[in-house]
Image: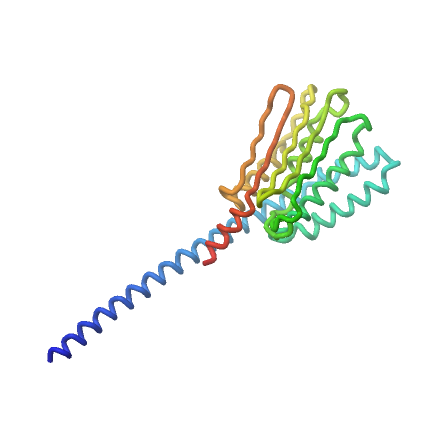
Amino acid sequence: MLISTILAAALVVVSVIFITHIYRTKKRIERQTYTIKQLQERQNKAELNLVESTLNPHLFKNILNSIQSHAYQTYFALDRLGSVLDYILYDSRQQYVALKDEILFAQNLIEINKIKLSPLFELQVKVKVDERDPYYQKNLMAPLISIDLIENAFKHADIQSPDAFIRIVIELGQGIFTLTVANRISERPPLLKVKSGIGSRTLDQRLETIYGNHYSLDRVKENDEYIAQLKINLRGYENEVRSARR
């Protein structure tokens, strides 16, 4: 009788432990599923914003106007433009691209914009990338992230002024991507446009939606100089995504 009572009690305890374990496991799976769903919803929203930014006709109009005004550089510019269009039309449809591909896109975009500049214009482009960094080739970069900062520099710089400049620095080290763009601001008042600032707002939304607290974007105006710096912690972002999938 005593043995039966002990066995019954043990069975109850085991049952309670088993049920508790199942309940906790179910709750953990529900939390993980909810987190993954949130990340997917963020990504879907980011892709919609990406479509809005990639189908902006002003980008192509500016590039084509630059090519037409410098016929002697047409062949070179068209070759770079072909690469840019391929990236926008095909590679940018992916959820992520390799950082090396986004950097190449940025360099091609800079070369295309260069044809509108005087040979005496101060344009400095520095690429400080550790190609041994594993994040150089990992598909963790949202495509077309660099368009807005680079295009704005060429748009707002006073390219006719003798003391004007544009400086662009692209860096990668220890899993952190940095893009710094600086330019002297034109003294001429900009033309006001109804849709002015859409590119910047889209960039902010995409960064917040995709990378959350793993990025920073600072825009600073000091006297006649404008500086924008974007940092993305690819290592931290990858770790967060991995944790959400466990």
